[in-house]
Length: 244
Ligand code: NDP
Image (cartoon, rainbow, N blue to C red):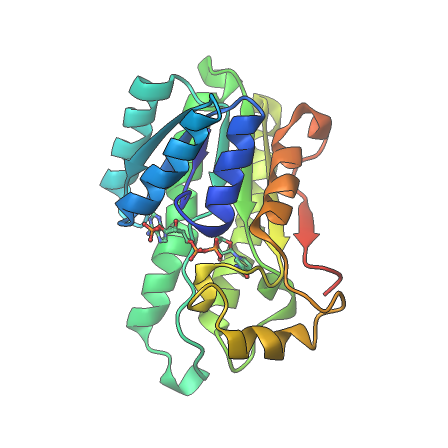
């Protein structure tokens, strides 16, 4: 399995749970080598198989190198979690320039596309592969929008949803399922310091369960979509958002 952005947050929780369930896991990361190694070390201590491989998924050559390295180190993969994503500071649309938009789209959309492409090349039964499953990490922002906050991020996740639907149809007859998880507010570094206290408290008031989610609660949905229990589930979305 390849988990992009597996060094922290939802990706790290997914890597750990996936290893527990018997997957050999590639923990991809961009620059936080220490965090990625800690995730792999935990997997190994649990008796699982894990490797950490650096690659900026926004860069095509790095994605190709990542999947080639995985072929050598883990063999042919049957699962991809397109998890890596960035969220920049909240800002109104007037202050949002093309450079920031391109940065967000490059990781959140182009990166996910490139990884899906490389995974499909290897998994497709039409190309002699074993089949497999892809889970893209979207956001409730794709459905609810994020007005006055991060409209660029919401747009990137809308693209993920559309890509999920398109790819699911394109590869359904090749033994590959493609689904997405839309998390709500989850306590991770993406919100600053793991959820700045002020922001978490403010957000909490609006959440039906009066709390944000834990990364492992998202990981559980991801692992279900990847599993054989979801063998007839493709082109669909699970929201892990506490009723938001
Ligand atoms: P974190 O900020 O905690 O972790 C992000 C991870 O992505 C890190 O491992 C980081 O690597 C990696 N990463 C970022 N950019 C790249 C890149 N270009 N190439 C490779 N790796 C990269 O994020 P979360 O765990 O919170 O988010 C995971 C996913 O869930 C994202 O897609 C996010 O949009 C989505 N999501 C999160 C929500 C939340 O409330 N937390 C809500 C809805 C969706 P490194 O450590 O090296 O920097």
